[in-house]
Image 1: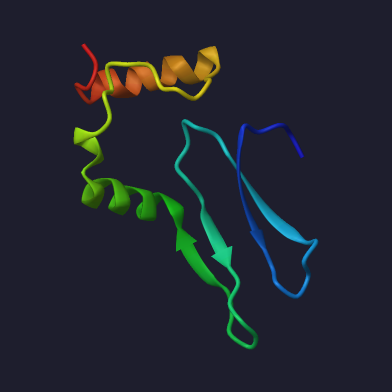
Image 2: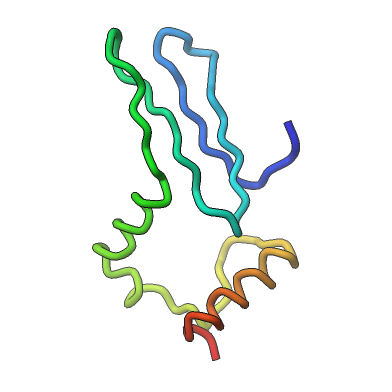
Length: 94
């Protein structure tokens, strides 16, 4: 598997050492993942991007985050350029 900075992993209870891994690139939409339920129920699909958007919209984060400041998380030069373009395009950075 190629190197990724961000991953989502899902573990299935009966197989404690088996994980499903979803690599994430910062500039891409978050994936839909399969969430296992108890047998005999089938997996449910979870749209992580929709969940994040709902949490952000309902959580009041726009008032808590100062987008003019750099993030505390270390980012690559490519990620910083992407983030600057995104925030400038939304009018959140001068």
